[in-house]
Image 1 (cartoon, helix red, strand yellow):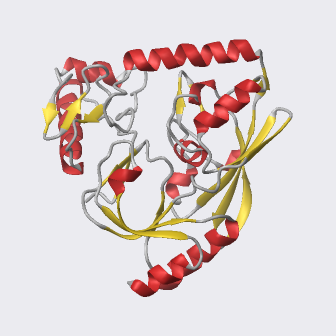
Image 2 (cartoon, rainbow, N blue to C red):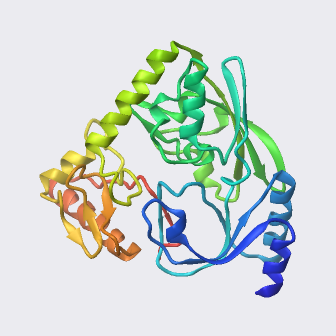
Length: 299
């Protein structure tokens, strides 16, 4: 649709026929018809008006680190905030940050200022908006521990939402129930700490990630949520699936709760392996594992 492309291009940088695999850390997915990079809230609003006028679907993607995209073509608009929505400012123990900012970069900047609270996120390859959407976490900490307010574009306008409305729980939030809402900025409260201790903790966790996670292969991070009082990786080990291969997808030898792309995996390979693991564990333990990653455009 040349007319739609021209409308979007007049407002923001717009690309056509872009492989979704280029937008995810798993490196899996078919083409997206359009990808747009709004420069500010005014540009975002204009894009959304075009989307509503043409009744076409849209999806916001950050770094794509927790995302499984289907193999088929997506006849909609992908909105990327990580090119322009990257500013932040500190005010004492508070930080206000745009949704497209890297959470790793923000954690490092907080550490320089002697502010603690984001150490757990210093190795998550995601945008701030993505971590808030998923209530991302690690080392028994999560975004719900630090987020105070979220600036959201919804129903054609921008508004601040307060923490008590987020419905935060383990890897879930109200934003997952409302994919039409767009997180544009976040306000967090951190706490004073010793800069050297903060940096040392971040370095220790970096070394632990390199030692325990398959960072040399594309993946979307942990695949399954941990059942109450249990570890998913142990259950996967118990069914003998460490190293199990299905097409181009493989259960990591290093960490069984990671399924890696050996180089030519499809979304179908990945989904079939996920379902196989779920079925085997349910047969053996009576537990149905719940996936942690988000599925998009998957049939």
